[in-house]
Length: 331
Image (spheres, rainbow, N blue to C red):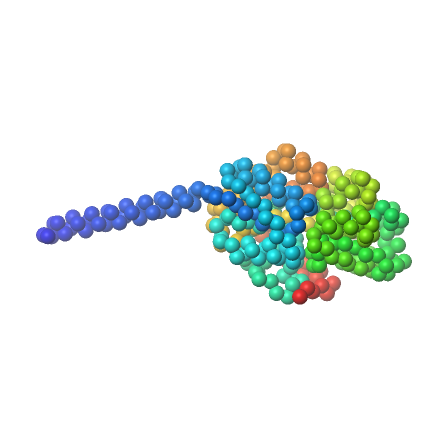
């Protein structure tokens, strides 16, 4: 082979290699741009049946319609959400396993001595979807008709009243601790595995008091089984317009809504995070979805990933102080 032939062969080889590289790059881009190309698992680390589970399933249904792929809600309750969170932290960072979270995600690092993940570092914020106010509820047999009457009753019987929460160290537990500090009362905490069974036992009269979210309990207030004494929002909520805020009822400083959002594994590509954010925000802004959730008691937020990340960091610090002051620890 002469010099000219060798130069031609080398040029041909280079062109072939360049073409192959270009084809591979195009294939990679096509694959990335095709997201999603298979079913998405939406992990809900809560029991089925609660108001947050209803929210997750409504979002999953519409997300499936918009993305053209199945979006499967998988309930993995336990450990105030830490069991489901751990499964997503270990999942491939490809956007095909996403996580529903609430305020407990920022609380857990302070109440559990060991977690199999870092709540702040092992996840990529996708969207802060909604906030939901909490309220103090009593069974209809409890004689207190107002918050002032209830505080007087609780002070007259230190440790004589019990309140339910969705679980040790969860947002409703911390709300109960905050209430006792602010009101100067003492009650016995009865933790449950989720909000739905907790509120069910208060409706049944097994426990007299509940700290729970508005969407879950509003129907029982309307039926007369429960009496809502005050809500934690800044203004009254459409789902229970006759119920005063804590500030209106004479106990300021109790604003403490629970946030609900979506996370992905930490190394999920930013373009996939943005796609999920864009689709979920669009769903939340659909008039029918907005109306349904607002009527249930949710407050629509529909944030950017950056706004949700800032909220998580803020509440991680805030809840840490509350947990420390209340001396809450779960081994």
